[in-house]
Length: 284
Picture 1 (cartoon, rainbow, N blue to C red):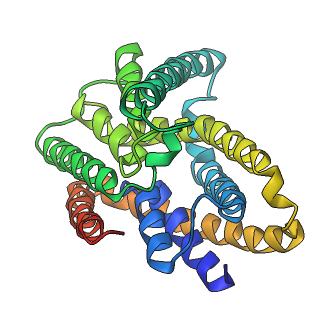
Picture 2: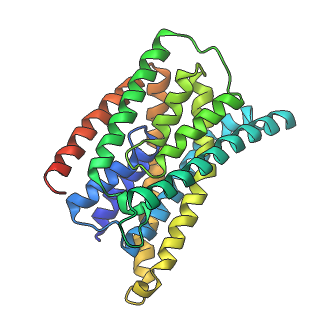
Picture 3: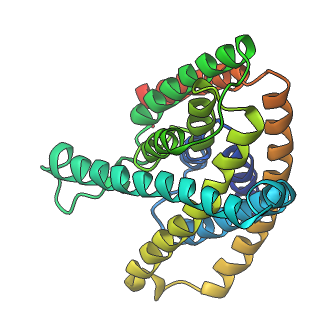
């Protein structure tokens, strides 16, 4: 994998991970077009580093606003922590149920079936992009017509956590697009749902990183033929590129969300869904 390919994937991951357009869909399409196998140890290590870069971008971008809202008092911190815990537990529980359901029911005829085996399926990605695109458009039209009426409570955090779970097995179902749109449809203010959605990223991303590291270790037999140092250097470059792309993407997202242009991300998802389906129909 060349440095140019690493930079392309890093920019796609960094920008699309935080924009509501699904980074996984864009990265998988790019990998297929470049002839890269996403299951290789090189890609596993790169993905870990790219996720780290985007997580750091989120922390730096939102730190001041989080301090003003989540850490302004002991009570505010406890209330926020409870809401995030509820959302995260529901994400984990529903995500686990979906994983078992997919592996034991839909992939029951596959030997050693893993939910990761459907990640590169462009047909599923296309469908997921279409669903989240419609959700974003619906939320965008709603938030332009009605003023926000509520804050995030236990019910709202539970719904956001449940919807977030769908992004775990179904690549193309944008996490930020789904969670922010769910909040908007429930009448939560734009600023509050954006802060809450990306706070969940900081909680969820370390689990994703640990999972990818575990997959890397599981490929121990393959690593004997690889020079980890030469894998680590391009991965560090990728992490830095995804960090910068993530910061720019967050500025763009906030601007469009506050400016009433949220629905346009949905139209974009529908367009990418069509591209993914076209590639799928042609055997990619």
